[in-house]
Structure formats: C-alpha cells, structure tokens
Length: 233
Ligand code: CDP
Ligand code: CDP
Image 1 (cartoon, rainbow, N blue to C red):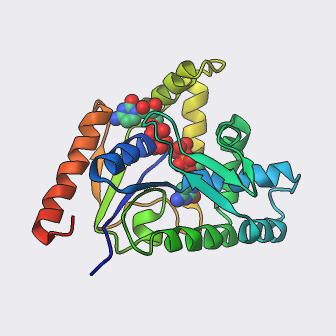
Image 2 (tube, rainbow, N blue to C red):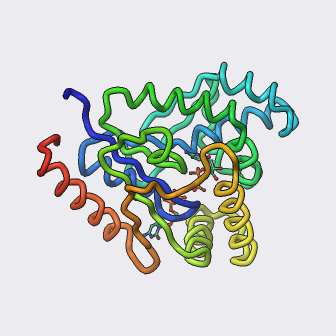
C-alpha cells in the first residue's frame, strides 16, 4: 500500500512521550504529532472565553469549530508551535492553570470526537509518530508500532521539577508535583471516553533510570526490526 507507517506512543504525564517521540520522528524521517497540545489549546480557549468547565455544550461548540495549527519546530529541543484560531499559544498552554484544567476538558466526549477526527485526517497517509493517551487504542488502532511509556510517579515528578528549573520558573515542591501528576493519572485513566490504557499489542517500556537516548534507541531499533520484516520503510 502507499500508506507510510504510524508509530503510536502513549503513557502518563512525564513518561517522556514528547521528548522521545520527537527524536524517534527525527531519526526515522516521520512527522511528530503532539496530541496533548491540542487538548491544551482547547482548554486555553475555554479559559480565555470564560466558559465554565461544566458547560459541555458551549465547549463542544468551541472544540468542533476551532482551527488548530501545529508547526513542528526545527530545533529538537523546543516543543511544537501551537496556534488556535490565529493566536500563537505555544507558551500559554504550558501554564499551571491550563495543566490543572486540561484533564476535565479532555474527558468530554464531544471534545475528543472533534480532536480525534482532526488527528485521523492528518494521519490518513501515515508517516507519523503520534503521542498522547489514546493513540494506540483509539486514534490509530491499526498503527504499525505501539509503544506504552511509563515511569514511577516520583521519577516523573523529579523530571517535571527539572523542567521548571531549566525554564527558570518558580520552584514547585516534589510533593506538590507528585500530587498533581497522580491526580491527572487518575482522571485520565478513569474517564469514560477512551481512558489512558495500554493497548493489548503495545510494547511497554519502563523508563525509570533510562536516559532519553536509551529509550529512543530502543524504539528506533524495534521499528527498524519490524519494518525490515515488512520492508515498509
Ligand atoms: O505533557 P504532559 O504529559 O503533561 O501532558 P500532555 O501530553 O500535553 O496532555 C495533557 C492532557 O491532555 C492529558 O493529561 C490528558 O488529559 C489529555 N490528553 C488526552 O486526553 N488524550 C491525548 N491523546 C493527549 C492528551
Ligand atoms: O510528554 P511527557 O509528558 O510524557 O514527557 P516529556 O515532556 O517528554 O518528558 C518530561 C521530562 O523528562 C523532560 O524534561 C525529559 O527531558 C525528561 N526525560 C528524562 O529525563 N528521561 C527520560 N527517559 C525521558 C524524559
């Protein structure tokens, strides 16, 4: 077929999905798709418009009519640039405010329906490394490669703390970060609509104590091994 492969990477916050997915995409010459940034952008828009988080009708309307643009950055270090309805929200979607509200918005069925439809249309011809919570289970159930990245809560909190330090943001305690992460894990894995779950056919990588390049290399060699058998890359 003329469809290029899709690599699906799922897992909880701080497991290393964005960092690793970007590097895998770069090494294999595929496009990187950060689906979390889309849920964050819609959350930003909801807050910007002062819509109550439980007004599912107004939020559904917003999610199905908004225009999201993602431009992969050239620099491997920096995140994708994110636009919603013409506003560059690359920085704004990473605030604590958006981070604390995004799981409530992402639990709404109509929001998921609108964003998944967009993701599937971008993935029609394949050639993606897509990362999120429901990529292997729901968005691209036929993905050639499925990876489930995990790490302990304490390891993920430690990584987030490092991120804040590097960005010169005010220090947040490890206890606070662990609580935030555990709460988001819980919300994402217990929601009714496509919860965070390891796909039955996903390869799980426990990343405590593994460096970014070790995880990247594991995934790249797994892909190359699979693709050499089917000669699709
Ligand atoms: O980078 P981090 O892991 O903190 O979060 P993210 O990947 O940017 O995703 C933010 C939130 O969006 C998650 O906590 C989920 O609630 C939601 N999300 C989702 O429901 N489905 C996806 N495919 C991606 C993100
Ligand atoms: O996208 P997700 O929330 O799953 O995680 P991330 O934003 O890619 O990674 C969170 C932080 O952990 C980043 O600063 C990564 O550089 C770091 N990280 C790490 O130290 N070791 C790994 N094996 C993976 C990520």
